[in-house]
Length: 238
Image (cartoon, rainbow, N blue to C red; front, side, top):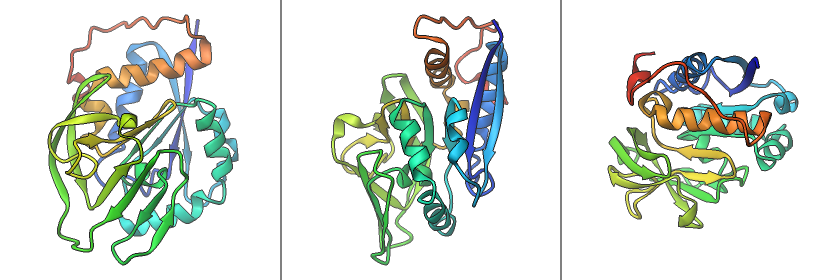
């Protein structure tokens, strides 16, 4: 059977601040090893998201505060299409600023409130001390094993329900540096502060994300067969 997946890459030109486009490269490489044809559909700024239902997987990386505000305004024009597909089970990965935008709200350092899409049950507060960032290596324990990466964020994110965390911090700061949580999970979507990029550093999670897409598209009984014996960390070479 010829397997195909379509990745919907949201705002690619505005969300590459920490090399998060490497997640797309990692997905492409692992799909190649799994004999899956990965088609990439880019959704640029001020482009309608109404056709997002044609995708099998969504991705959005991190961004600067200015870009985040522009994306925020743009997202709400087409938020119904994005929300409906995620609610219906479309897998996705949202990093840093992208993660924050899918939460309940973001409180800027000047007190301004940006309403989020409300999918991740989390809110974010940006410290008025702009130098007080959470920066450094980050290691978490998750359902997908221990995942590693690098965090660099001003915002502190707080979960409404800690059971919805993506993982628990082993070392580093995570969501807020206080409660040992990192990221958030809703349905088949994941929000995280793990740069690195995440999928290149953690190929076991990359495989799990692809598998979610394949099972949703081709049926829960479908088994992926790898044609390459890749080792943990090998996707860092993409």
